[in-house]
Image (tube, rainbow, N blue to C red; front, side, top):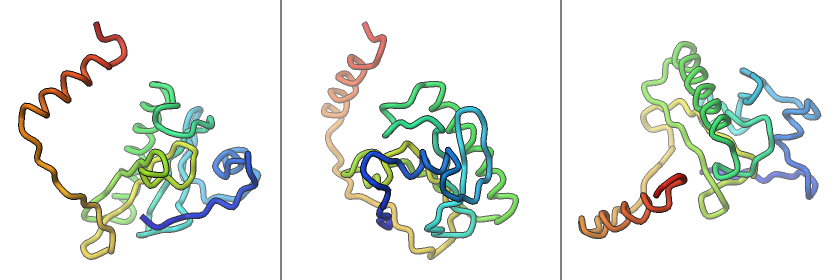
Length: 149
């Protein structure tokens, strides 16, 4: 993923400034919980970011209501992107933490129209652990789910 460098002063979030109207943005959609705007780094025409209005650094800091609202907005935006740009594919991308390739630490989701040979590569090495390891991971995760008994 191309690296964007947020030049906001320490303690200031570029997306919070955008939500507040302090910096310009090509806004696509807004509601009480979300805002959608054109990504300045347009990998393909129609590349939109959907963010929470409230500042939350990542997926683990947003509420279930905000998570649902972001996905609903992303779906609406994706439908508009399909109608206007007619891409043959679409990728939704959401990154958390530096190691997850997050560059702006305000929760957001990329809606990226995709075309053959557009230069985007989403791949990773498969590890193919045995079924017993997968079953163990699943059991551990089930036990850690909120509300699990």
